Length: 110
Image 1 (cartoon, rainbow, N blue to C red):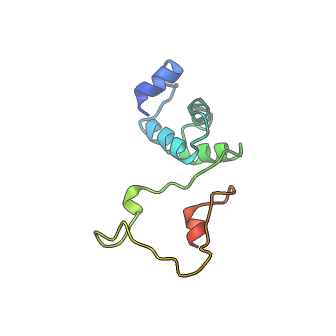
Image 2: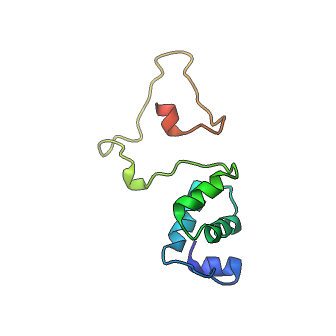
Image 3: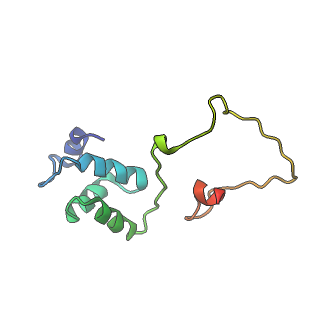
């Protein structure tokens, strides 16, 4: 989102809107995709536009949180390594599905 999008949603930027406000809003949207934008903006105002406090306030609601990783942090090996061809060596092959709140690629890997 942009500051113009925020103005379209709220009518005007909230009082005290910081220069990094859009960064906080977009980080919260990525982290809590099901949480409404209006709710994120309200939590931001209530918590003085401090990202850590906003995260804690949204977590306290029980909203679903997803792991976010910047694309630059993902290393996939040598150029040309993907797509890879896989063979099943065991039958049956375990299949993982997103079944509970603790599911993540990191937990599946570990």
